[in-house]
Image (cartoon, rainbow, N blue to C red; front, side, top):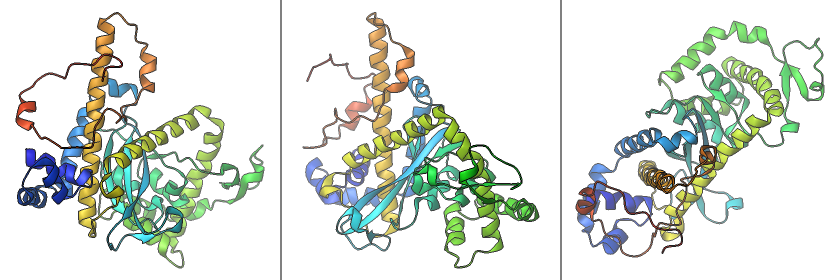
Length: 380
């Protein structure tokens, strides 16, 4: 187990095997063997699923959400080697960069992460994580920032049985569309820019259903299908009807989003959870100034999964000990207002020392069936 844990941390902290062998006192050849035969995307994903499911059933997690709301966003990392899917984008500085696109639940857990080119719009990959979900999270509603939205994506979300609630920048510049131009819409007139061709959607309805079913059943990945539709120089009849159907769903969503302040707050709160986890991931991937050193996509996916696994391990650890602190405070007579619990977050890492020698005393730790003693406030 020591070698397995060390191999995972070597990926998640970006040490690499040589540095990990040096600071842990373990054999490089054994670490390389464990990495080759045990650290694969599917095996790491199984560990991620176990952690997310365990966290889902913790009592404190329910105060943060029921697992139905989620968000996704891309995080850019510099790349120190030549990689086919990395690219140079001046606004992110010199050198090549790569996006690690991750999906976050309303309970602060992350169930999926994948490396993608930074030049491709985030919206292309949004649905992949939802459709690939193997955890117990009952995902239904999903939010992104502006980069994760297109009108076609609105159509795909509705057709696949999900609710799409993006936070769109410059909302006052967005267009919505009506079904009947003879009707007058109070207050919405200035932003109505066209009419949706309901007849076209009706004629192509069976084709739409077959398309959504193909994606839902996994016969084709959502990202591949969306990419093909968006990259066509001339839109096919299918691309046009998906776009028009998406315009219909978007036109229903935007007025509701404008009128419902609580929904806007909920969406922003969820996106902030994803940003907090980005800070944690950035803090974890610190060696070599956070520069990724994997050139092959599969190796990048393995490292992204290892990083997600360790991120979830920290979230679980923090949640368990936060619950222990709450229980102890109640025993000491403190009154805990349960409405306040939804405002605390397990995305903390100030108490973790990531520098120095690393000792993997796994056998000793496994013999302990209790939590560490809680420290008093202000104790070092």
